[in-house]
Image (cartoon, rainbow, N blue to C red; front, side):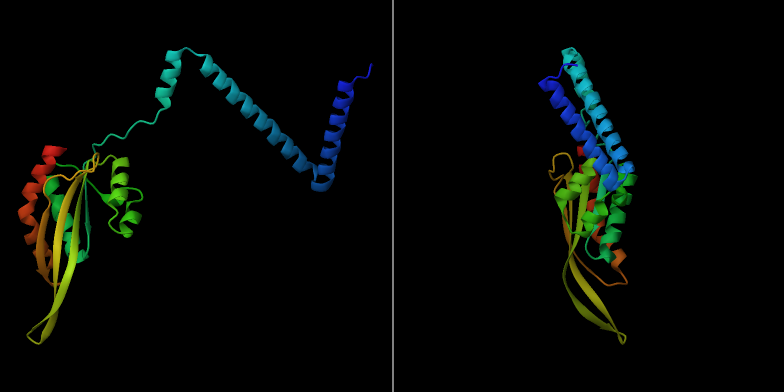
Length: 224
């Protein structure tokens, strides 16, 4: 056989590869070499398959390419799952208000989403009133609106009666509704002062929020 520069380079390259493989086999064991070889083959096959797929797509008619792109384009979430009601502040007032509002919406045939079933919502709520983060999670899960009730503590005083004492808490209730798609406010919102003790908190919460319920449901029906 006639020796050429190409043959010499090829033989030297092959000899170098064989020597490297042998050294790896001695140092790390033949199993590692076999695994490395398999990984190289798999990587080559994957790159070849990807190149073939891209080549076929690029050579396809324009309408076929557009159809392919539209098929794999992420589709927007349909916002039709209803309203999320979230209450912050003293649970003695916040929890009854949330329950009362949800009950009113259901009676008016307005869908209500439970915020506890929205992935990630509990963590966001634990970090405070992050409206943007809450809106984003509700939107991803198809919500249409969110109602935020906040019980703001103002102060307290001690009541003495019949030899007993009780703490009278003074607070401000604020309720606002937001369109999830636009982030705009829905309606005028609601605010009221409230004073309560641990014995009458639920009753006081109901008395405070009841005058607003009809207006709230009407504003939502006009929007969603």
